[in-house]
Length: 279
Image 1 (cartoon, rainbow, N blue to C red):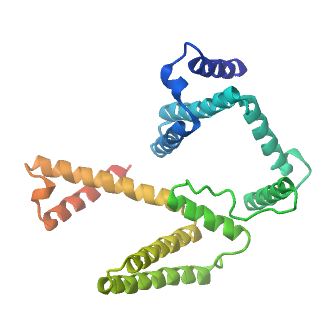
Image 2 (tube, rainbow, N blue to C red; image 1 turned 120 degrees about the horizontal axis):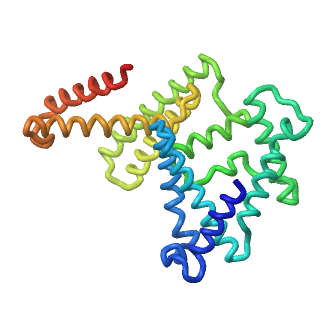
Image 3 (cartoon, rainbow, N blue to C red; image 1 turned 180 degrees about the vertical axis):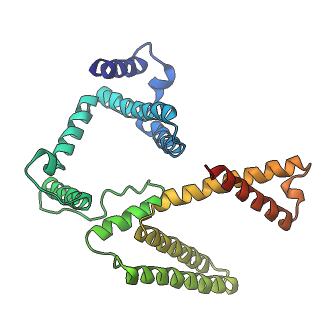
């Protein structure tokens, strides 16, 4: 395995070196950012498709991005792939004292709690003044917004800022969703009477609060909202494509159909989807 890893590191260096690939030589950290995001999402797609051969390929593409950045670091004399691996190994050992030390934990939840405690201690040590920073530190602003909202709520919950984890708490979260919806209606009514930018911004803020409350609801019932919405979007795309194909088979296009006709095709698509799901 070490030989294979050394080989791919050497290939990356050659691609970036004199006589290498013009495209690879041209890349910078900034130019590579969208590729890392794209490759990560392609991994998610293959996981959801349960396509292991494709997953193997896509994980390789993610690793390529890591090697790319490490090679740029070597060229800039800031860090190497060996430094990346050493830092990762040190972190894994340091944050798993129940595996590599004498600490004891009772289940996965306590592991997460200990992990966060260790991170806060590390930040405190690094600051030099005992400041561990915010509990929300480490949630990138560049995350997809729905996922970022979820992670912010998770971090806040880890320090106790959360709804009760029982039926009463569930009722409170549902009540909060309804409260935010009422505020959207109020803001919408105001915006209809007031064409100012401030009124539009208030409506936008209230819609955002509804989405944030729904993320809380998803988290409380232990559903990842990013994955849930991705699934809904995928189902919508599949059903809509089915509608287009069904309309075409009838010599029609969706734009020529009434809403009632399209609703019938939508129901057909849902039925077909259900039939495919049957074993």
